[in-house]
Length: 208
Ligand code: NI
Image (cartoon, rainbow, N blue to C red; front, side, top):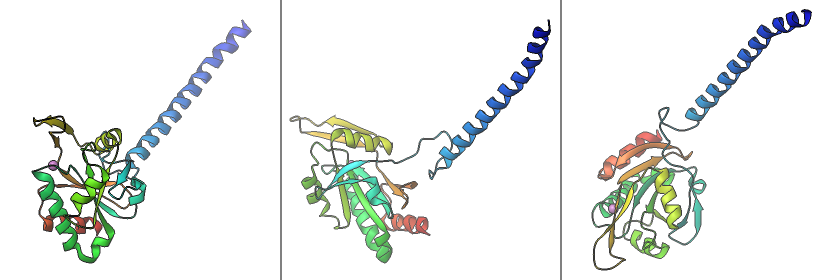
């Protein structure tokens, strides 16, 4: 009988202990969640961040990662060199925006990432970008690496047969300019058809 009584008095104490542990765990989880959503990512809770780590090959053949661009504002644009419509116009506008930024352009790097690594090898990208601006950085990589970085930026890519052979295809892709901060975090998105003045103004406003 005494034994039973003793165990009965222990039940509520154990219950309080379990409750306190659960509450502590809950507080720990919610603070971890708040830390995660606030960790340098400009986004709303429940929304995946734009951007992320990548390892790609530059137009000069060197291998670079996202960390190599820390300290600079980045204008990132995904496209491909045989694109006839949006890409040439957007790259031209980005190059003109860098001219407009003048001295402030030294804090900005413009990066073109191909969504067509099959055809856009480093030499092809280098030749293509030289027509726009010596300041443009071009990135390519393996199909898997390009798919990874496009996914991180939520850029959709789909290949469309153009007829006349396996190498004759077009690549439909999201056309948006991503402005990333010196910390590598997403700042804002700029429409691919924005004028050089509008691109430069957004960069200046973000840098302030
Ligand atoms: Ni394009």
